[in-house]
Image (cartoon, rainbow, N blue to C red; front, side, top):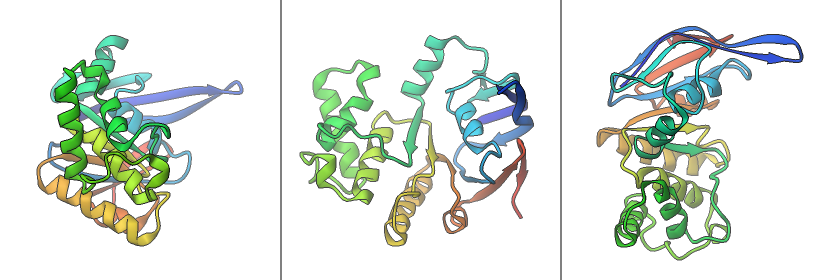
Length: 222
């Protein structure tokens, strides 16, 4: 699935060079559920951005499904993000004036699907996360856990190869957090590759594989 070889990422911050990633070598096979932990500023989000084709490394290569993506142009990267990678974030990123159904459909807009197919795929995706009866509800009419399920449905509607999640349970209480992790585990057992950044050790403990990143270096957790 993913292969990172000697990946570096450096930023200039107030005339000081910051190494967010420092020679990362990493292989994530298809079908794994991976949790990434580490201190603030250790490189977690930067690593997820590399995996998600949201940024390019300063050095080294990032490959997805055997294809180097770190040197592709903006248009090619946008197409990969639209078709192959689903994203879930801590703050849901739902449009408050659109219904759950419409929010999921918005995630399919880059695919330029016929209207009927877009509607059908969005409805099926909502049903797959247990919200088949909530499609007409606005985000403000849903609980935090339900809003996160809408965000997951939006990511899944495109039928991605991998789901990348950045603190997906960070805004949720423990019971709702566990419900979301139950859903992630089901998706994983159904064959979806999932890579998530989390500060919550209870969430990370449910992953098949745990990674730590500190000062831009990745290690396997004990």
